[in-house]
Structure formats: structure tokens, C-alpha cells
Image (cartoon, rainbow, N blue to C red; front, side):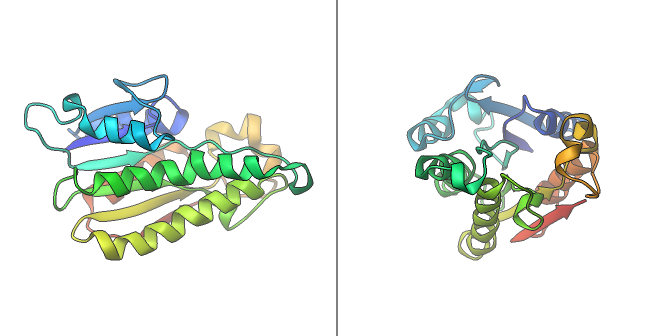
Length: 205
């Protein structure tokens, strides 16, 4: 398959790219400042430009799947958050991924797929994470509803807890919460892209 991957420079994106490439897929990476193609997917106009880029489709002229492993949200106590902080979280993690799907349905193969990223904070929140919890919950709700509308194309979300590899930096924020290896999270992307399920939120950890 030819797969568009957003956020390949991060810890998760790097693992997803390597895992998909090892399985024989052709991965085209895109991001604001890294990747083969440089587009800021938080801007709907740049999402449109990305889907217009011939380099995305290759010689065969087809795109089989879109996978997202990126999304920026601010962290602060509710009393210290401003309206723009929540708007920023929505743009950075929700709207950006919704636009990849909304605009991508006309660009991805008839039975292609979309895989979005959410996270544990929507179901197991921590202090300062209200924006992240909001964004994750919104993405998951969108996935379940969009699955009905876009069939036979498919859409799923991957929702991991804290990465085992990140425990030295973030473990104190998740006391007693089981971690998950980033390689296992990458396998959830394989499940979404190569499998047949849709409207699922794959919870890991």
C-alpha cells in the first residue's frame, strides 16, 4: 500500500514508519517542518494543498491509507487556561485530523483507510490535561460517527497510554498507570490499516 503518514518525526511516528515499511508498504511522510512533504495539517488550506501534491500519489497515482501520529495540545490547570488554549487544542489535534479525513475521502482509494491518534487522557485524565482530554474525546466521537458516513472506506483511532520509553520524562504524571511499548502502539496502526475493522478506538495500556 501507499500510505500518507503525518508526524513521522516523533517517537510514535518513527516507530509507525519503520513498522509499515518493514511490512512492504510505501510510506510518504508529511509534516510542518519534517517529512518528505512539508505541509502544516493544522491549516485546512495546506491540507488541501497536500492532497493536490502529485508526489503524494507516486507513479501509480493512488493513495491507500492516511495515518496520523501527531497532535499538539497545551497543558495547564483549567483556571489558567484561556479560550484560545482550548481553540488551539481543537485546531492542533481535532480539526487537523478531521480535515485529513474530510478532504481525504475523495483522494483515498475506495476501500482505503484513515487511522487517527487520540490517547489515554480522554478516559483516564490527569491534572492540567483538560484540553488534551477534550481533544481526544472529540476525535474518538468523530471516528465512530464518520465510520458510518465514509464506508466502504474505513476509519479507526489508536488510543495509547504513556509510552514505556517515555517513563523517565513523563512517568511521574501517570502514577500507577500501566505503560505501553511504542512498538505495540505501532502494531495497532498495522491492525487499522491492514485489517477490516472500522469505527474502532484501539485502547492500549
